[in-house]
Structures are given as structure tokens and as C-alpha cells.
Amino acid sequence: MTTYIQKMENPAADPKKPDRRLGDEWLDWDGSHDAESSESDYRIFLGLAVLATIFLILAAGAFLWLIYPRLASAGSLPAKLISFLFLAFGIVLIFWLIIFVVSAVFKWPATRLIIIPTLVNRLLSIVMTIGKLLGISKDRLTNSFLKIHNMILGSRPPRTEPKRLLVLMPRCLTKENNIRLRELRDRFGFQMATVDGGTEARLKIKEIRPRVVIAIACERDLISGFREVNPYIPVIGFPNRRPEGPCKNTCVDLSSIEQAIIRCLN
Image 1 (cartoon, rainbow, N blue to C red):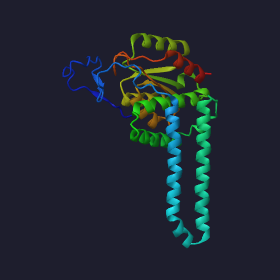
Image 2 (image 1 turned 45 degrees about the vertical axis):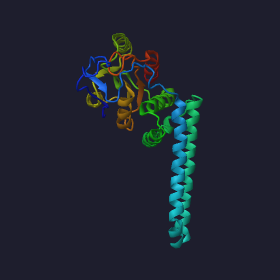
Image 3 (image 1 turned 135 degrees about the vertical axis):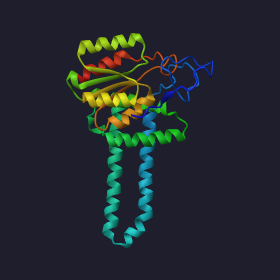
Image 4 (image 1 turned 180 degrees about the horizontal axis):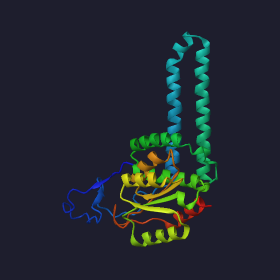
């Protein structure tokens, strides 16, 4: 899991930036204390997902149009076969996207079959590229995506026993949040680990071998870990809020995490 937080080289260089107790900060952080800086509506990702799907279909159609004369010269069968495959690809992709959008908009407890990790990761990469071209920050897109993913996966999460449920939390959470999460661990008996970054998270996952992971972190760490882990283990990610900036006294919606834990443990 590649981390996007690096150690601050000179914490005293800019007096406008408060000291990081963990010694870390985002490279592009401007020192602002905006707790909602990455909060975004789930419809942002949905809209860009529709654009991404249209782009894929148009790109495939343009490619088919370019090679069709050569296929036709080789015989009608290859041309018809490729055209059929293109049509099937477009129909399946549109059908999958419709189910994905309807499940998110209406909070429909759709089957987890639509959360195909490889397909979701591909869509996520394309959406991130389109968002970058449109000037939408990666953090906002990640926040929007996680809202949708948690909504769909969380409606019918994989059921597991407490010892196979792993909750990962960062060291920068407030003391109150830490105490509350430990109370939840004592109450439900799930596995929990405080990690300092991607390397520690990977080691814990390898050690515990969970069936489901609930992760708390900033959007940057969550999305990198999601892409790496989610194809193999379902991940429910909760972005933290940063009232004092990155990596210092962050907090999270504990009620949402408790609900996710209860659903996973049935």
C-alpha cells in the first residue's frame, strides 16, 4: 500500500503551519484547517463513471471502425464476429453501470456480484483520469467513490466471525475516537490494529488473514490500499476528518463504523 504522506523535512520553515505531532504532512497541504476539504457528494463519482463508460464504448467503436475494412477484406465472418463482440461488450458494460448507479442512488441492496473488483478498479482509474482533466481533486473523487462503494457493499457485506474481521486505524485519531474504537473491539471481539502506513497495514493483513477489512485513514492512503487489497479481500473504507490538518487529531464517524461492524458480524 503506497502512502502519500511523507515526513516533513523542516517543520519550522513555515510558521503558518502548525507542528505535526506525528512529524508527517501532505506535500501539497497549505496549512488550512478545513475538516470538510475532501467531503464530496457520491453523485460526483457516478456522473464521471457514466462519462467513463461512454468514453470506453466510443473508443471501442472508433477502434472497430478503423479496423473494419481490413476485417471485411479477410471475409465476412471475422467482421461479423468482432462486431458482435463489440456489441456484447457495450451491452454488458451499460447494464452493469445501470445496476451500479441504481444501487447507489436508491440504496438498493444489490448483489455483491456487481462489485467486481477488477472492473471497479479499472473504472476507478478511468474516473480519476477524467476527474484530473476536469480539475476535480483526487481526494474528493476518492471520498465520493467510497461513499458509493460502502453503500453498496455495506448493504450486504460478507459475513464473518469476529476473529476474521480486521479494523485498521491510523495513529493520528483523537484519544476519544481511540477509546471508543477499543470499546467496540472489547464488545464485539474483532481484530484491530493501529498502523502507521501501508507497510504496517500489509503486514497486519498478512498476519491476521481477515475475510473483511474495515479501514480508517485519509483518502490518499485509503485509495492506494483499496486498489491493492480489494481484489482479494473486501474493504470498507472510512475517510477521517482533519479539523487540525493532516496527521493530527483526526476523527471519524463512529456510528457508521459500528453499523458496518454489526453487519459484517451479522
